[in-house]
Image 1: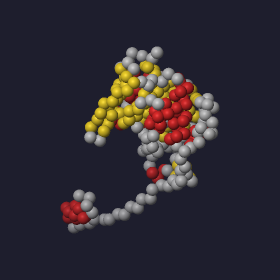
Image 2: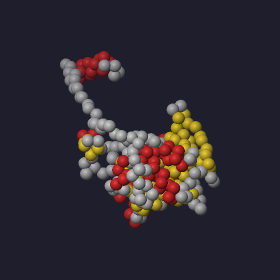
Image 3: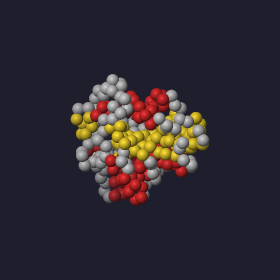
Image 4: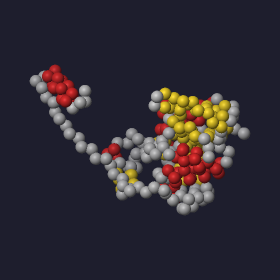
Amino acid sequence: MPLHIVVLAKQVVDPETPLSAFQVDGRRVVVPSNMSPVVNGFDEQAVEAALRVKEQTADAHITILSLGTDFALDVVKKPLAMGADDLILLEDPMFENSIDPTVAVAALTAAIRKLGDVDLLLAGRQASDWDNAQVPLGIAETLGWPVATVAKKVEVNDAMLRAERVLPEGHEVVEANLPAVVSVSNELGTPRYPNMRGIMAARRVQPTIWTASDLGLDAALLAPAFELMELAKPQSNVETEMIVGEDDEDAGRKLALRLREARVL
């Protein structure tokens, strides 16, 4: 049997979207329709980690698993263009509360169990939209699998996982038996860019779509555990102070003195 690697890849709002483009409608974030979503950057690094494992393994298969609604196929197919093999989309109106980590964990865990033969689950360390960093841990806890977090290197030898974790003062190497969960950090390095051959191949792949019913989930099992009480854009007050002088050199001296007074220098 090939080594089966599943990578979680979330479609998110482009983090480069300017703050002025966001609108808050009650407890929802509304982004203009002309702003295209992207694959979460940390998840792209998880895809890269999976591809590196595949390159070092005689026989491996990579499945991309994405949870959400209103998928943009040209966006969520990017991991396929990078070199992954299959794409499964968990798409259902009942997943609209998937910003709640408990809902995401319930749906994704059900999908992993439905797949049945998963050896390694990789995910980004966090998503750039809500930054919860809880889903990989929740899945590992639910499945009873060992988990390594904030990894910058992932290797698989036979049925053993070896991961190098990032620590504030250095790094540590951990090992665990498969199946296991790993959250991948940006220290892994820049993900590969899809080439034209990969892009064309990805276009021919039709994703598999699973609904809540396909996963045996109902409203009770997907009930959110958290309630969003308030959502608002941060207020920013900009104050401008003009520094003038007799000439450019004098203005530069006055600017340096003002910055020192403000404890910026």
